[in-house]
Image (cartoon, rainbow, N blue to C red; front, side, top):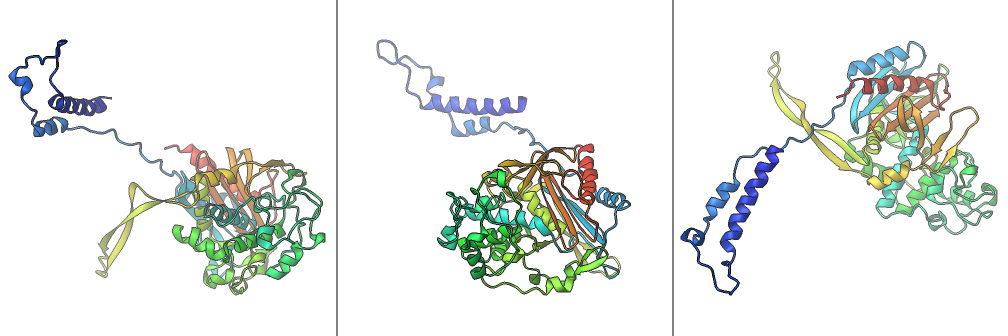
Length: 456
């Protein structure tokens, strides 16, 4: 309070002096000027005003930026503790704290007995791929490339319609698994997909958007991703690279063939190879709209670290936040070589807005509740799911993934801006009452507790 009043007092004094010097002489009730003393008629020197306003002041210091509290040891210990109770080929984890990437760790093998798993190893992440599609959909809507509430026939042609309903499926209904399309086998190819959409047998007798007819649909993601391609007249993976991955320095793709075999993990299921790194990295790279469709439901290949970067964008209301680095040259005393050592500037961050706050809020808005027989109910949002009182958090948004022996889980809390990504290969399928894979869940439970047990 004292510092503020000094600054305001100096400003008001200067303002009073200026106004006094510029104001007309006071008049009497008769209209004549009243006599003035010499001092009153002396103009105020400008330098005097400046000097009086230049009283040294100290502004209040801004609140320090909240700092992550997890350490590398915390992550390593969580992995070691949980893996005493589970078997797997490899596990990798990355954390988000206060809306930015914090720690990462790995356990086991990327390729058994040949290459160790690392936090940067690229893994086919299964159905968490759908979250990436949703982020692209929201970004395209922002960019004016697609209307999420327009009938998909606007992009596919008039024949792509449900003949049994008055309303028609939109991109948004595909994002809630209520499009009314049947969950057919995943496939690709624009003409083949268009033929399916034009066939009466492909549709359910229901109104699109009705949560009472919710049905999880991998095939729906083939259609959603290709709809985004048609709307924007480009391959979705190309859009993803430019719109999201390049700005945050992430290396990932819906197309395994874009990645190097030496950075990709072999996938294991039941102790056997379900898809080798060479097979995955050897996939053909699509060149035409519709050719990537079968990759959209679960083919996104990324590391825990790079997936956590996208989670950080969601947790931080659409902004990617990273520390500003500076480099110091140090000399290797043995070789004399000059080395550049990077350090983060305290409380200095580069912020890149990738989605509007409104788009993230739209993704997080619950549309209806889904009550499955064997698991806790969840609220369906736009691809994202929402549960309360889980993993020690008041609320969590999340998505799971499972295919080819991969069990993955991403979660984040928009209130604390904390989040975690865990990806495993070669583990047994073990889903808990929350509908989340137990191995991933147990690691997260330890790490979320540590985030809160060590307040800044």
